[in-house]
Image 1 (cartoon, rainbow, N blue to C red):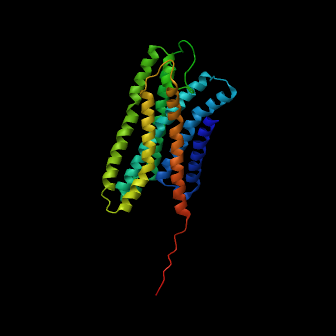
Image 2: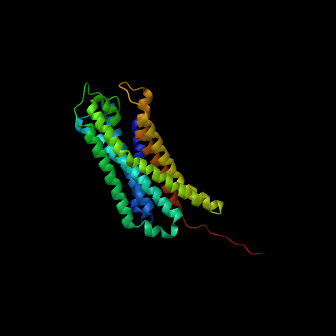
Image 3: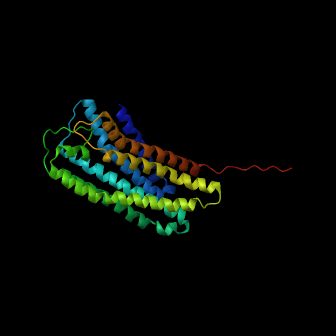
Length: 285
């Protein structure tokens, strides 16, 4: 039931973000277009793993079909890679907004947004297909028991021979370039952003600019730090409780945190948009 609640929180939060940014015409801007895509990715990402685990827990059946396992690997890696690409695109959007506000509508137009979104989705799909093909290129060795609550590539490799492991290492080496490029691009963008923000003469202006980037920085830091720690942690045939906890954490908490942060930020933006301006009462002597 706790796992189910963890699932329902980001589900409702991301559905709220997608619904509001779709129905409210005032939010049909590049920033909210990218945010809608990230919310949709998080919604799908957590739906790939948690519902099946909940069903297994409630029915006491700890099994998954081979096709279901293949699809979990495909969708999980594809969506995670796509989200990384969109987070990079959002950093460029913030860069254009703060560093080049006069050219923003020319640089980040509808056509550019469509191309960046399409590239992000295609790059994520390609990464997922490559990992899926490499992981399931050979049959399982030994028992078909995965010490995990979903089919995750690092835990699956324990059950394959050295040929599959070598193929997966090659694919991982090739696809690591995408998140590495995204990370470097985000760092460069925010170095430029902070250099401009610190030059703003008023405290109010600096605070407004920092608050615009704060939610994004929290999301990026959480996703990158947790994901890197989990994947760099060596796997074993008998993982500890801490390993399972970290796996649950990185697959459920970032999407949940993203939905909470962005939905609250979105509600605040909508609130200030629909609220009428304050009245000023002047008195004369």
